[in-house]
Length: 188
Image (tube, rainbow, N blue to C red; front, side):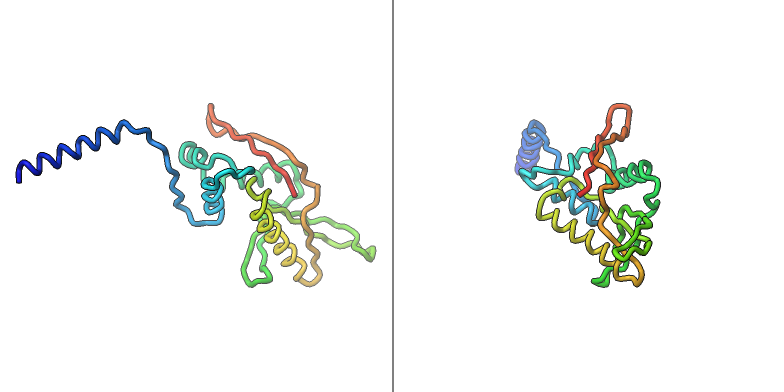
């Protein structure tokens, strides 16, 4: 019995020594179940994705950023640059019975097709770069249209998909003396 125990311990030690010499490949662990985390996980594990949301593993696990960091930074940047964008997301009762929140929106007085001045709600949605190609592109546009439809369903209100008011741009966020992220924004 004693010989078997010594042999088992010897085998375990050899195994530990061999494993310690192998290169370690970090495997990200996606602990959150919200939609942003699911999208990040899908982006991370999609081989050959031509448009990606970036290196989520580094951003989250090395730099310690939250899943929603980039989303919120794009919103903040747009609100600083375009002062008439509302400061909070627009809560909506969707036609499917669920609720939603439009990321960016503004109210504009415009003449409608009858020449009557009306308040128009323009809506934009913030998505990672991976939403610039299908099937996510279609999903994002459907979500945006659902928000517009929810505004239009309220009597007397007019909702529209955000126009070119918000220009394409790039900005950076420094998160430490040595690390910065450059964020590109493109509005479809």
